[in-house]
Image 1 (cartoon, one colour):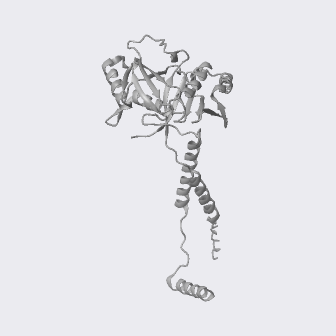
Image 2 (cartoon, rainbow over the protein chains, first blue to last red):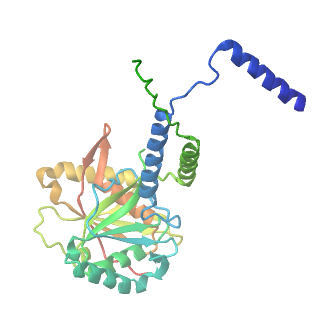
Image 3 (tube, rainbow over the protein chains, first blue to last red):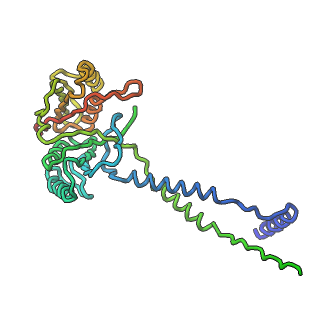
Amino acid sequence: MDVAAGWDEDDATVTRKTTGPATVENDMTPMIDVTFQLITFFMFVLNFSEAEQDERIQLPASQLAKPAEGVLETPITMQLTATGGVLYAGEIVPVDQITTPLRREREIIVAAGKDPKQATVIVRADGRASTGDVQQVIRACQEEGFERFALRAHYEPE
Amino acid sequence: MPALPRRRLEKVAINMTPMIDVVFQLMIFFMLTLNIIAPEGDFDIRMPLGKSAGQPTEDLQVPPIKVRLDAQPDGSLAGISMNGEPVADFNDLRRRVAGIVDASGAAADDIELELDCAYDLDYANVISAITAVSGRIDDGRLIEMIKKITFAPPSAE
């Protein structure tokens, strides 16, 4: 080991002496530029993909689901699991008790000086959830004065 | 008198190595935490209270299309019917709706469709039905069909 290292050193010294400059200065600027671009890209993608996503919900697929145009005005997300609960603020609320959190959402919207009729309720329901539960949630939203609904699905081109 | 020798400006070499280390660490962190998720889209439905009960408030020139989706006890689709007639599958439903839309011409935007679904039906079938009636893709181009979709009140559990 020692012998090999010593030989390498000697050899390097000899080479440097015979072939000219010992160090070649690399211009690091382009590499750092590209790396920062990459980091910026990943930061953006990460923020968008984590919004409103929950792995407990497997959305149904559709080839016609339009990606949202721009940012929805005062969106409220109702996430329905396959077993029939609504994910709200990190907890599973039974479908028949969703009125209380919805009323709170409504009060927040009214307090902000906005009209609940203009708010959009995003329904992110699992493909295996029963339709009756989804309709109950929609009904509860309607009773609180919400009119606009966006049924969310995975966009899947054929 | 000889000129004084000008002092050469000394270049200060910045050590880039720690910065590059940190930058690569950051990049690896973001690459590992990135989970690629299929893009999501919406079906926008405007449904005020009262309209869902099959009471259209606007004057309609064309009577609403009623689509019934029945379910097996396990939630899978048992059958589709449109205005009382049995429909083979969602493609058949799309063809029939396209026929009605094409025949009604300019009034096509006013056609209303009411979805009447069994309580236990898997929600994925509802999205398939909405996909079938809301548009079709011809030569890679989307042709919109029904824009007004309502839900009948949920039938008995």
